[in-house]
Length: 170
Image 1 (cartoon, rainbow, N blue to C red):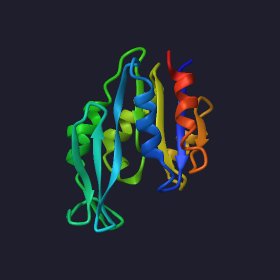
Image 2 (image 1 turned 90 degrees about the horizontal axis):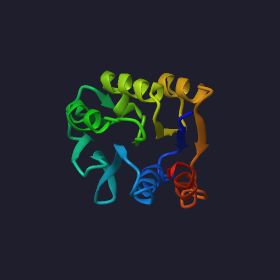
Image 3 (image 1 turned 120 degrees about the vertical axis):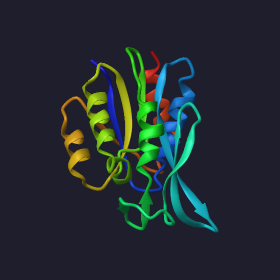
Image 4 (image 1 turned 30 degrees about the horizontal axis):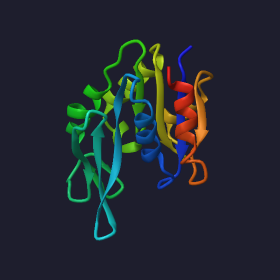
C-alpha cells in the first residue's frame, strides 16, 4: 500500500521547508514534483514562485499580474502550472511524488486538480502540503481513509522531515 501524506499547516509554518528537506534527505530516492515559495520585496509578500525539484523556476502569482484568475490580491499565471507543475508530476513505480502545495492558486488550474486525483489513485508514495483552511478538494483528500494528515507546526517542522525520510527511504 502506498504512503499518502498531507502535511497540513498554517501560512509560515514551514510547509515548503519541510518538503525541500524531505527531498534532500532522500537523495537516492526517485522523486518528482515541485515547491512554491513567497516572493518578498522590502519585507512585503508580493507573489509566489513555483520551482520544480529539477530546478526550473517561474513566478506563479504576483500582485502585478492582472489575472484572471485572482486569488486574494494576486493574479495567477496558469501557464506556469501548465509549463512547469504538470510536467514535474510524471511518475512511475517507486517514485515519491512531492507537491507543495495544494492551495487555491494551484487548484485554480483544473488540469492540476485532475493530475492530483491521478497521483492519489496511483500506486506511488505521495507527500503534499495543504493549508489548514477548508476547501472542497482538499477536504475530500483529508477524508480519504488511505491518507494520513499530519499537522505541521513551528514546533515539529524540524523533526518531521527526518521522520518521514525514515519512513519513505526505501
